[in-house]
Image (cartoon, rainbow, N blue to C red; front, side, top):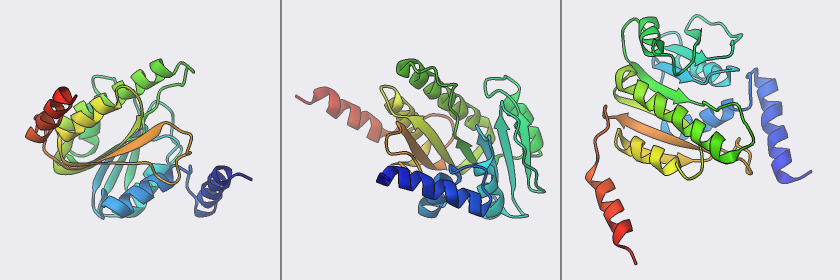
Length: 218
């Protein structure tokens, strides 16, 4: 058995043993161990939440003093005292208001996005759609995420992934890139970690400096 296949089997087996809906749970677990994205008592909104692996992780971390909202077009068969699932399209104009109402009008401490389009097999199209989904979540964050809050976002690596990262740099104090061990090595997915949300996009001087240097490089 190849190393990558063995790793896939390991996380699949672990998910079954530990009661997680999917092996993707371990991607969020690793990210949270490294960056403390989510804490006990956090209010978390998870976009692209089906089948519910990340919701389970969040529910365990935030405890009784926190709350988790999962949003997905697909139904999620998961219940808990500290979580609620919403069957909604991220592009629905009412989604932000509905999530805010569920949170009791309070802002979230954390926004997660594991959104992925229905894969067409045409890479350029799939990449474009996935980037647009992530951009939509960032837009929703401008009203849903509290100042100083954190985020964790899946992205399909490609021509426009840098565009998403620049958007994150303009909104968070610190941005990190990671590929969790539970991700398939051959997969194009990466994850961006955003720490300390500043709010609506503002262009940092460091971004201007980097782009100027790139433009003038021989």
